[in-house]
Image (cartoon, rainbow, N blue to C red; front, side):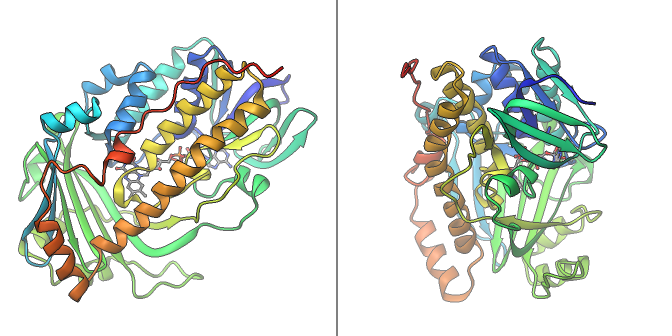
Length: 400
Ligand SMILES: Cc1cc2nc3c(=O)[nH]c(=O)nc-3n(C[C@H](O)[C@H](O)[C@H](O)COP(=O)(O)OP(=O)(O)OC[C@H]3O[C@@H](n4cnc5c(N)ncnc54)[C@H](O)[C@@H]3O)c2cc1C
C-alpha cells in the first residue's frame, strides 16, 4: 500500500506506540500506527505501574478504566530468598498517597494494552494497521520514508520509532548495534488464584531476593490471577547459542532457596523464557524528523519496574512538546529528547544498580540486609525522584 503523505507515523503497537498515538491524538494530531504482528497483543503476565506512570495514564484519560482491572497493593516487601527473612517494606499507605498523589497499581499487561487500544480505536484521528513489518527507514525531504516487508511504503512528515528492543528505527538513527544481553533470564506468567500455594495477600507485592536470582509475586485482575516472575543469571550464557537459561538451570539456581520460594517456583510458567537486555544511555535519539520512544530509545532492566512507566512519560512529553512548539517537529523532537534523555538515563543506570544490590551474595548481601533492616517503611528517599516526577507544563514556545 503506497499512501499519500502521513503527518505522524508511529512504528510499533506495543504500550509505547499505542500510548504515543493516544497522547498525540489528545492534542489534535492525526496519527497512523503500523504494527508487524497480525494482532495487537501483550504477553500473559503482569505489570507494575508506579505513581509516575499512573499520573500519565490519568492525563490521557484512561485511569478510570484501569481502576476496573487493577489491584492496588498496600506495600512492596523485600524478602531474603535464602533465609525467608523480611528485609524491608515500602509502604504505599497514606503518606505515600500524599507524597505522590497517584497510586501504585499492578495489572495484567493485556488489560492495559486493551484499554489503550480501545481508546485509540475511539479516536477519529488515529489509524491502526497490523501485519506491517518495517524493514527500512530513510530520510525524505522534511520527513521520512518507511518500507515494509510486504513491499508497502509510507511517506510521513514525522516518524516515531516505538518498535522496541531490537528497533529498526534505532538502527537508522543511531546504528549502535545489538542491545546488551546481561546473561539473566526471566520465566513469568499469571496463574489462576486457585493454583497459588502460598499467597502473600492481595495487598502485597513480594520480591524474594537472592544471589543472582529473584522471584516476584503479586495479584492481578481484581485478584483473579497471581503473577510470578522468576529471574536468574545463567552460568551457561553463550552469545551464539539459545541453549542457556534453561528450565534445568532454573531449578538448579533456586534449589537452595527458602521452602516457600521453591513451592512457588513449581507454579512459575515455563512455556517461554525471556533473556534480559538493556543498553547504555545515549545522548541522541533524533535524526531530522525521526525520533525514538520507549524501549527502542532506552531499554532498561526490569528490576525497578520502570520500563513501561518511562514509556508513558515519553509519550506524554512528546505530545506536550509538539503542542508547545505548535507542531514544529524538528524543534519539538529535540526538546523532547532534551527532557527525556537525562531522566531515562538515570533510570537505566538505577535499574542496573538495583539489580546488583538485590542479586548480591556473601558479605555484600549481609551488609545489604543490615542496611535495609534500618530503613523505615515510609522512607521515600530513594523513590522520590522517580515516583514523584511531574513534567514541567510548557507554555507555547514562539520562536518564529
Ligand atoms: C520481565 C520484564 C518485566 C517487566 N516489568 C515491568 C513492570 O512491572 N513495570 C514497568 O513499568 N515496566 C516493566 N517492564 C518493561 C516494559 O515491559 C517495557 O519497557 C515496555 O513494554 C516497552 O514498551 P515498548 O512499546 O517500548 O516496546 P514493546 O513492548 O517491545 O513494543 C514494540 C512493538 O513494536 C512492534 N515492532 C517491533 N519491530 C517492528 C517492526 N520492524 N515493524 C513494525 N512493528 C514492529 C512489536 O511487535 C511490538 O508490538 C518489564 C520488562 C520485562 C522484560
